[in-house]
Image 1 (cartoon, protein in one colour):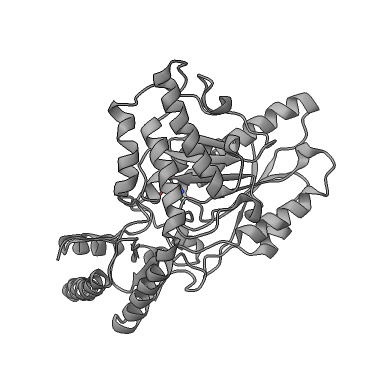
Image 2 (cartoon, helix red, strand yellow; image 1 turned 45 degrees about the vertical axis):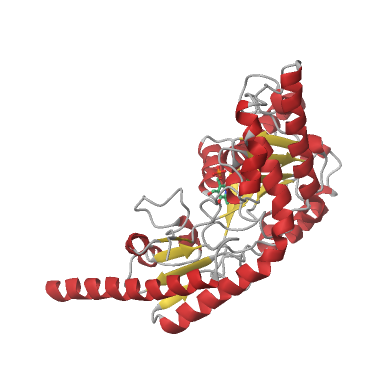
Length: 406
Ligand SMILES: Cc1ncc(COP(=O)(O)O)c(C=O)c1O
């Protein structure tokens, strides 16, 4: 059997139809969309088409979309851009206290580090909400954390490591209720969600979710790498964080990545059409989880089984270390991961698993498998068989090492 790719949360392949849409914009239609000649205007039309495709999906206006280099940049822009604008506003309206940000303890590093930077540099006060054993934020905790100086709530839609789904629409509703308590629009609490892992499977209608800012990325949805977007609700006070030209409504300087933007727009459109594949992926995921829990003793599912993304399987195994499992599976032709691709390669226990209340030694034993649109039942069966072998082999080795030391 060919290699089996079960790491679609790290990145996906580019859909062949998406690639076909992109190709002319590399070497035939290569004008700069900011140029007024026809080469430029042809590219501008393509960027506008992609903007409309994204706006259709998010149920927003095209000029509420800002194209970026990916979700990392979108998240930085949402969080730091808002705080920058907050301080500009305060200068005009006489300074009060530091803005308060509410976030969860298991956001992606790009959200977490952006917020920690603001906290450490004295620009914001932060509450990190617990996510409990099931990996889900509680509405009550959100309500109880809101203070008079709360300015921003940032909660991810689907966690990238354990795939747990957060009640974004309900959180949005709570935050909106708080909007109405303030007469000054500057005092509105803003709601940001990182929807990077949600686009393939969940409704991202910004009206239903009640969000003001939403980030997503091309390469998680069968589109290209190096491109993403930030939805910014009209009237949301954010400032650009990168200075230069006037692209993207003066919010994101830098020449447009036209092929990337074309690919992102088309991938978003295709993600809507591919929703009929979701049940198949859920069936594969459930089959995998049930079989492993039954057939591999000492295996545990991380995070809620029910409030879980259709494509996320995340286990920990007693006496088998995650990184070793990934390497051993790779030798068998199976691509998996220990958690987020960005943090693998570090020896630090995963902050996501620590947030579930696991002990550091338990956090090193986890394995993430994320099937995708192309995954077959045959591949899943083969992956389960290989996983059983590999876990047993690693346990045998660690058992014999322990014996030698005793
Ligand atoms: C939840 C989440 N947010 C943000 C990112 C960063 O996305 P990008 O690679 O487009 O910068 C990722 C990618 O791993 C992710 O899973």
